[in-house]
Image (cartoon, rainbow, N blue to C red; front, top):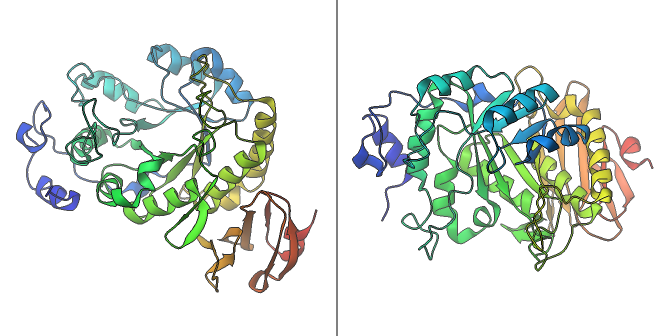
Length: 396
């Protein structure tokens, strides 16, 4: 039976890491202590895009994206960083100066690493993407057969955390929502060195349904993944990937604008501090940006709505999301939830409680909810309504 993460971390806090501790080559002892993620909260609601080349940065900024996630394969880090700064777009990427050739990913060039620590547009360092994917010879998602084990990720994260910049990691959404993988995925999520987490769920492009029933309630795949990671991580800041394309021409289909909207608002309702868009097309030919005009128009509407309520969603003084109360979509609902097909949240502000409610179905539905004075309010398919009072929420 593998050593559980919390056991490992208790031991690690007493002794410096060595080669025997994790199977990685480590140049010297690391003296970093675990730090609270509360000092590294996202300063604003992040709208991000995944791995775009230099020539696309200005275009995505014009589309309302404020943060670039990861340098595209083969891209020049310095040129990419300079263009992001020139365009006034923030970044989350791997730090310079790490040991990639030796596969330890530890800091090999301290000067280069420390130069990135002074980069104001670099919000966070990006750790390895999807570490729970299988090794080439792997057959099952176990501690022995994944690309990088949770304790190996911790060795790297502990090293990178020396400078105090936030650390971000992304996980496979299907692994997060697989109850048979709770042990290993919760071990990834509760690292004391990692500040921000995300998951990538693309149900429409994968040929799956938009909704998932799990743990006694219905939500989007994104909503469930956020809830599970929040529970495992102690409510650390999270980001949802939202797919814009049918990335594999032989599987699934293109998401509709309404399906894009539902996944985005469901993520926000469940507490996401940001969204990361996936715009790739892999087949029949590759493209970094295959988002259709109608999806981009819906994205523009979403960004305008987020801008209007940004001070409600985000805590400008402390950073991160304001505390909110989640109302899950439950068939046998009571005071703690909403009747299916609705889910929502209530955010406390100085002006009172702000409500966000989403219809999870591709069909019209009516909501009656007396605590919010809502009676027979009609929702269009995948419609989201927002407001402080019933009249505001019910208005057309």
